[in-house]
Length: 101
Length: 101
DNA sequence: ACCCTTGTTCGACAACTGTCGAACAAGCTC
DNA sequence: GAGCTTGTTCGACAGTTGTCGAACAAGGGT
Image (cartoon, rainbow over all chains, first blue to last red; front, side, top):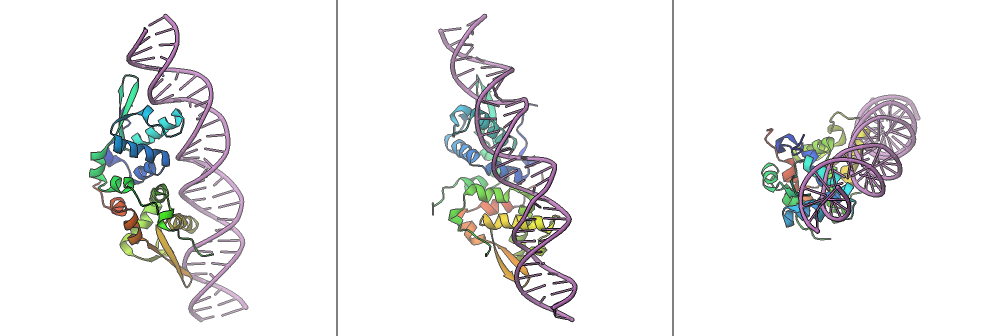
């Protein structure tokens, strides 16, 4: 049971949307979109590491990210290309900056 | 006590995504996108009317739909233009048909 | 070997969510 | 007005979710 990283065609849209529909996770995705591959530890958004680990798992299982272990760290990256292919425009739409009002 | 339909700028993205991240609601949105303004009653997707009413409320409060009363019915419609303006590409991305595999 | 760093997993808990039937409200039609 | 149609609201209930601290696991450095 290692690759908890599903094929995108096997993930329902609602699962992807659910994964994106959380503030912490959206911040993580945004950070990954802007900063590229990052260590889990650098993705700190004010929750405990247990909670962060949970959110990263949700993202991974929704097909949004890939994780690889390097030393004691784990590097996480967004599956941008695949996502853009299966959900054209989705990430752009979600991550786009919006006028505050 | 009119149904409240928030200004889109007042709705967090996560709220919109949460509203879309449900199978029944997604079917409703899809039906509205394809069929235009529809009566609540015509939006039957195998849940009780209480549940359907709940989902329509979630959509309305997320700024996705508008509702107006006509006789004993209520006509619901998608706030397409506003949504496309605030979240360019989002609805297109979510509603687009996807290859099954 | 020891410890420190980095993460994951394990309960536990409160909050939220989807669902239903029943009761209620408001408007048509007879 | 009586009754029907169309929806909403009100508990209630089970399931899911976000959160945490604590325990655990694995690697690296000294």
